[in-house]
Structure formats: C-alpha cells, structure tokens
Image (tube, rainbow, N blue to C red; front, top):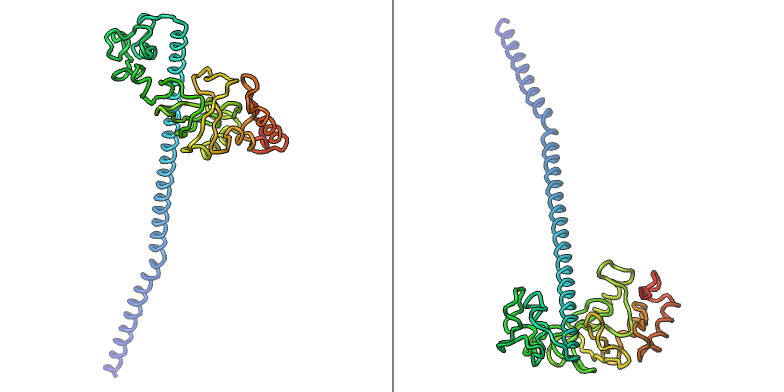
Length: 306
C-alpha cells in the first residue's frame, strides 16, 4: 500500500510539471505573436513613405531646375536679339550717313566694337588706316572679333543678321528661327541671315509680358514655318526695313502666304502700319471674317494691334 501511494504521488507531480511547462510555453508564444509583425509593417510603411517623399522632392527640384534653365535661355536669346537689333540700327545710321556724304572719326565712338559697325565696304569714313579690317584699333574694348565683324569682308560673307548688304527685293531662303507670330529669321542668297518682320499683320506679344493669343500665334508660326523653304518678297509701297533694322516683307511657303494664313486662322490681325499695303484688301477681308465668327484667338480675346 505504501508503494502504491508513492507511485501515485509521483505521477500526480509529473503531470502538474508538464502542465505548467506547457502552459508557460504557450503563454510566451501567445504574448508575442501579433506585436512584432505589426511593428515591422509600420516600419516598412514609414520607409516607403520616406522614399516616396524623397522621389517627389527630387522630381520637383528637377522640374524647377529645368524651368529656370529655360527661362535663362529665353532671357539670353532675347538679350542677344536686342543686341543684334541695336547693332543693325547703328549700322543703318552709318549707311545713311555715308549716302549723305557725311563723315565721322574715331573720337565719335565709345569702343572699338562700336566703331567696327561703321566700317562699311570701301571704308568711306577712313576708320581703318592700316587696312587690316579693324576700325579704330586704339579705342578701348569691347572689341570686335578678328578681322572685324563689321569689316568689308564680313559685310559680304559673315552670315550675321543685318551685317551684309540688303538682299534682293525677292529671294528664296530657309526659315532658321521663329521669334514670334510675325517675326522670323530667314537665310539669304549670300548666306547671311535676316530677321524678317512680316508686312501687314500683327500678333500679340510673348516678350515683355505675355498677351492673350501671343503663345498660340508663336506656336502656330513655328509649326508651319520652322525649317521651311520660303519666298521673301518686299512691298514697294512700304519701307524696306523697320526702325529695328528688320526686313519688311511678305513670306510665302509655296502658294501659301503665311501672313494671310495667320489672319485667316484668327491668330493675327491685319495691320496697315505704314498705310495700306499691296495685299491689304485680302488681309482685311480675312480679318473681318475671323473677328465676326470668333475664329482662333478672337474667341477669347481682342487681338487688335495695341
């Protein structure tokens, strides 16, 4: 009897130990099973959000950098265009003075580069005493490039806008740049490039403040004219050049008059700036139709000349 009682006590003790051990083990698992995975998921989500924020910031920085670069290029092109226009006006004064038989000496110029613009073919003002193609070499810089960008050799072959003699009153060329809806750069038979202001039309501005209809006109002219072979034709009733030194002419692409096309599409208005021009009746009829029918830019704004 004593032996049987001892055995039963040992069995009872063993069962209790096993139960406690198992219970402890299960309690440990149940207490940690949900929490670590939740923490890991939260950390992963926070890291993904941080990466997305970094990517968004990088994209914004890149877009801002590209925008500033575009603005800088636009400002540079505009500044260069203004400088070329100023040089053309200066050269036109030189030619006018030479035609009148006037005279000028090196003391009239603030820099050698300015004097160079007065160095016309044949040197009518005697600015290049040693014949090296450089006018008033003793004047301070800014200076012209080697051989003088305005020398007689440059006048005939430099290719810079407005540096050469006036091109024929009618010539064929290629549109190499479009400044806006009514102004284009076109090559000439001599190999130079002239800025041509289309006679008879006016489009809203895109420089010095964007006007309603300006971007649409510029975009349309770029689409139809950039790289095109065109015919440039002067109008005997109008001046050869405007006060910026730009050629005044019609531009035809094949059988299409680009000025008339812009007016017909409601992207430009007919503009008899210096009195009626030869093609004015056709332009005026197209202008009236576009206004009345609210075609193109007329549908949202008045694009009449300022």
